[in-house]
Amino acid sequence: MQTPVGATAKARPPLSVPFFYGWVAVALSFLTTLVGAGVRSAPTVFIHPLEMEFGWSRAEIAFAVSINLFLYGLAGPLSGWLLDRFGSRRVMAASLALMAVGVGLTTLMREYWQLLVLWGVVIGLGAGGTASVLSATVANRWFVARRGVVLGFLNSAGSTGQLIFLPLLMTVIVTAGWRGGSLLLFTAVFLMIPLVALWMRDDPADIGLTPYGAAPLSASGGAGASAADTARVPLSAALKTSTFWLLAGSYFVCGATANGLVGTHLIPHAIDRGIPAITAAASVGVMGGLNFVGTTLSGWVIDYVPAKKWLALVFVLRAVSLFILPFVTDFSGLFIFAAIYGLDWFATVAPTIAIASDTFGKRSVGIIYGWIFVFHQTGGALAATAAGAVRVSFGEYHYAFIAGGIMALIAAGLALSIRSRPLAPPLAARPDAARV
Image (cartoon, rainbow, N blue to C red; front, side, top):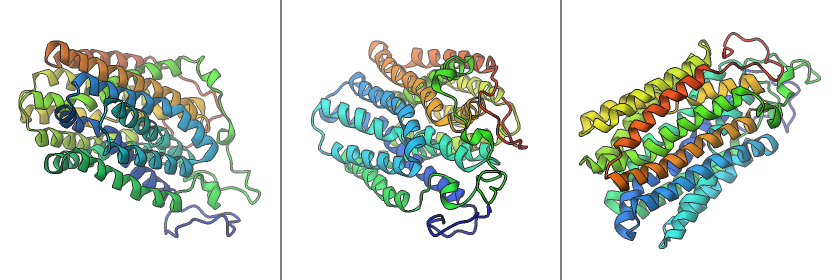
C-alpha cells in the first residue's frame, strides 16, 4: 500500500480500505464499464422483438445500431478530453445519467425516429464515456507496476457485461417483453450513479497517494514525479507518426469484426440457423466468460511480451473464428466459435493502449487513444450496416463473416508493421514495462 504524504482532511480516501485505494477506483471503473457494455450491446437482443412489434426491417434496426456504434466511438476523444480536464468521477457519473435517461425513455418508444434518437444518439454518446478510454485513463493514472494486468482486467468488463446482461435480457424479453428488459437496464445504470459519486477519485494525488509502483513523492510533492507524468504529446504530433495510423487501421478492423459484425449480428444469425433465442444468447455468455480469461491474460502477457506481436496473434485467432462461423449450423458449432472468438474478443484493447501509452505518454493517452477508438467504432458502424445489407440481399451472413476473417488477417499485418518510438519522456524504468 502506498503511504500518504502530507495528507490533510481534504486529501484522504473517501472509503477506508486496508489496501491501495487505486483498486477501489479500478473496481468502480470495472462496474461502470460492465453496465455500460450491457446497455450498449442490448440492441442485439431487441432486434427480433422490435421487428415483430413495429415491423421495422433488419437493415433499419441495424442502421440505428450503426449510429450507436459510431457515436460511441466519436465520444471517445471527447470523453478523453473530458477525463483529462474534469476527471473520471464526473465523466462516469454524467455518462451513467445520460444512459439512464436514454434507456428509461425507450419504454415509451413508438416511432422509428425515436429508436434512432434514443438507442442511436443518446445511449451511444452516454456509453462512450464508459468505453476503453476510461480504462486507459484509470490504469495509467493509478498504476505504474501491474499496469498491464489492470488494463486487461478493466477491458474484460465489456465482455463480462455482455456475459451477464445478454442472456438475462433475453430471458426477461421472452417472459416479460422487451420493455421489461429496458427497465432492467435502467435499474442497473441508476444504481451505479451514487457509488461513483461517493467513492470514485480521479488521481492518486487527490488523496495524498502516488501511483502504485511509482517512486514516492517527496515532502514537496514533486521529486518523485517522472517527466512523463506531466508531459503531453499534442494530437497534431501523434498524427504525423506511423504508429498512430497503424493502430487506427488495426482498430478499424477490430471494431468491424467485433461490435459491428459479431456483436450486432451473431444472435440474429444463430436464430436464422434455427438455434433458439435463449440458447443463442447463452453462446454470448460463453464468449464473455472466455473473454474474461483472454482479456485478463492479454494484459498480463504484454507486461512481458512485445505488445505488437501479441496484438497480431490476437487478430490471427479472430480470423480463424470468423472463417468457422459460416459453417455453424447448431449449438455445438456455435459453442466452438464462441470459445475461439471469446478468447480474443476484447484482447486487442490492452496491447493497443500499451503501445499508445508508451509512444505518446500517459498524460496524452486519453485524447490520443480516444481518436484511435473513433476508428474502432467507425469500423463497427460500417460493418453493422454492411452486414445487415448482406443479410437482406443474400438471405444469410456468410459473405460478411468471410470478409471479416480476411480483414482480421490484414490487421495482423498492420500490427506487425508498427515501429514506434516514445514521443514523450519515458516512464520510470520498471520490470513490467510493455515492450513495443
